[in-house]
Amino acid sequence: MNLLDSLSGPAGPGPDEGAAVCSRRGCRADAAWRLLWNNPRIHTPERRKTWLACTDHCGWLEDYLRERSLWRETLPLGAGDGPVDAEGSR
Image 1: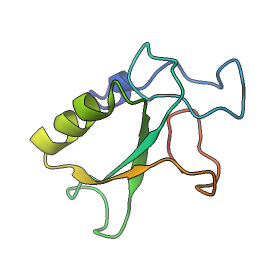
Image 2 (image 1 turned 180 degrees about the horizontal axis):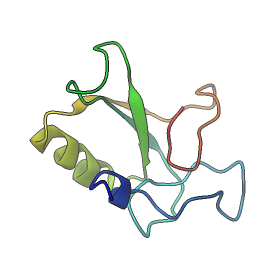
Image 3 (image 1 turned 90 degrees about the vertical axis):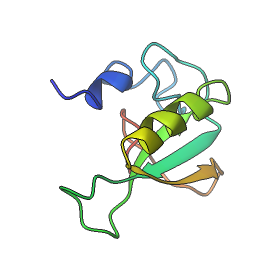
């Protein structure tokens, strides 16, 4: 089991299949932020993975990624951001 996988909630869509929910384990709040990251050991420099975060967990998730040198950018979640999968990835 990958430590990064343990941060996301349960696999599969939430109660509202179209709703963007926070990636913090156990949190089902609506997401308000996109945290863009990549692992330079396995991803190309331009690749960006996405975690979604509610306002309460945005700082925690960003700190987690920064401590591991994975964080790249935090952006507000907008209506035109496109679909995301159950893990918050595009």
